[in-house]
Length: 263
Ligand code: GLP
Image (cartoon, protein in one colour):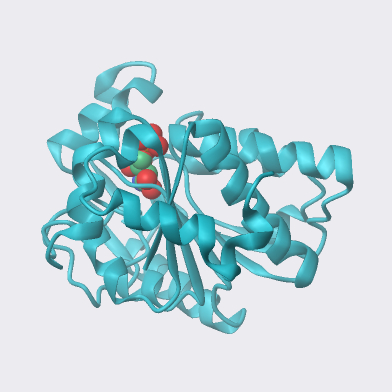
């Protein structure tokens, strides 16, 4: 695992957007794993700008999102399908039939989960998986006690997650209580993983995720098992990390990061 700390959320998002841009330019038919949440909004704005201003081409890109709420149709304004259409898919030249999210109102949810897994494999697996982190330490909707080898499945949301996300629905009661999520085993199979965390509210859980012991109580700790995982944080989100100075030294001095350094 590597940790990159940048002064602001804007710079942290810019770095993740640049990592995605490199992937897309080098491999225009890449399979991207995508995330939702407020943190990702600035990232998607930056990708849209790269598309408009420097022709970043999404025409052959295929995407799989991490998760979707159960019990609402894709066209519901609170669905993650709507989120992705609004923030990214409708603003770049992606072929919408190449974008995938679990269907939250599928007649048979277990079958939907099996098909989602099968579909990712049939497309060659995920090249670059983007993640946020929830306040419970979840990635996707892998809430506490998610098995470290779990696959795409339905999962009940914690009261904390429901509180965190219900503001995105017209009224709190509209917030679904369950979701389909890629499993930790699914996420760990991505060839490269980048987790983006910004703001003070993520500081405590990020420190546990990065520097704490691996535990199914905090699903983001599973990323410590991944061979190619980068955590990108702003100063606020990184403020409780013990080895901040070491991580900064690595980013400033190691040749691998040279092309990503500003100035
Ligand atoms: C949701 C998503 C997660 C995301 C989290 C963080 O719970 N399922 O994938 O990481 O929100 O959201 P935010 O960026 O709004 O803090």
